Amino acid sequence: MLNQPESLISLFLYFAFFGLIGTRRGWKKEGFVFVLALASYWGLLQFQGRLAFLINTVGNYVLLGFPSDQEGLLAVFQAPPLVSATNRETFIFLLWAVILLGLYYVGDVIFKKNAGRSVSLGFLAGIANGILYLSLIATRLIPIQDSGSALTDAPPGTQLQQVIGRLQSFLNVQLAGFFAGISRGEQRTLLLITLFVIFGIAAFSLFGGRKSQA
Amino acid sequence: MGPIETYFATIAIVFVFIGIARGYAKEISTTVIILVTIFLLDVIDSRLNPLLISGVRRIFPGFSQTSSASDLLLCSVYSILFIGAVFANYSGNSLNLGGRQARPPAGTYISALVGLMNGYLFAGTLWFYQELYNYPFKFFGRGIEQPLSPTAQAMVELLPQKLASNAGYLMIPIALILLLRARG
Image (tube, rainbow over all chains, first blue to last red; front, top):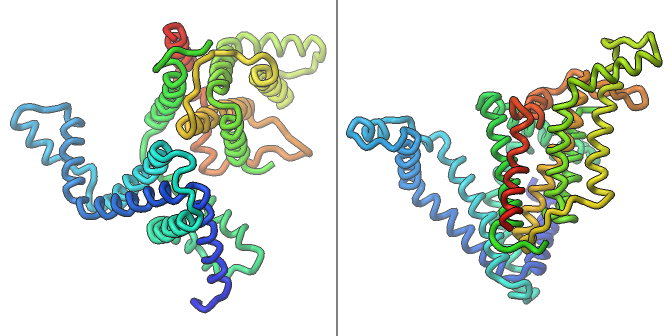
């Protein structure tokens, strides 16, 4: 399977795509994201035990209503962990995804539009990010591709249909899991709070911080 | 016509693009109009429905309140009223709340979020009236795919009108924006 020319062409297109993004954004922004995304993932893996302990302790302390007596404090350590061995990997990846999005935002704020305009360096930095995402993100997408028969065996011309079908079933499973996890009332409250938060951010950003124009 | 959640998602995505193109300073006024319209329709529907039915009965004596034609009439009236209110905000003099929009990239992200919220409120309200009146709309003889998929069945419980027991709760954001605007 490794000797397929199509795979080589696809890989070339993949790197060219990331390289072009790198040239558009500039090597400073791309390098910033690459270095800190890699470092944060490594850091999260190294300190996952301590991080889980900290979140479990603080989280349970808050959930149990900030106890101050001996029994209450003991209950904090005896409560079921929020981040356990079963969901630790998901938690680490979620945290890393948030950091990654934050890095793009911070990078845009720190570096000016014309920072690091070297085309070749930008292209290389873009490819570096492409390799990073290939290892950290693309590997997480393999289960979607592998559901059902192998996608590579699909007749030519039907791949798009197959991918859309698999994405739809994947989303159905994910949504069903989400809806089964919390009660209907909690889902509504969560959605209502989300709407209010979006509205609040927009309103505060328009009128909150400084004098408005009108 | 196909699965309704596909239409819902398509409309929501279109609104995201509209939000990014217009900016959230303008889009927030659409949110206010949508929320007020949802509230007003919720307040008037119990009074308006008997009036509409009796009015049509005077013209067509054979018109039955429990028929599918009645569902189609009520669903059409509320959908048209709602679409009309939103369209008026986009086409005419938009409600101008003023304020200064944040610069990109933060401004773009907020615009996309507000656009998504408007998409949910708009598509969700249209879906709500479809569901309330048993999906009466048919195009070229085909209606919404029935029974709904498990995803659609779960989503239908999270439509804007079902989020709170009272539509008055949806007025809270408007009170917030008026307070912020008053001090701005």
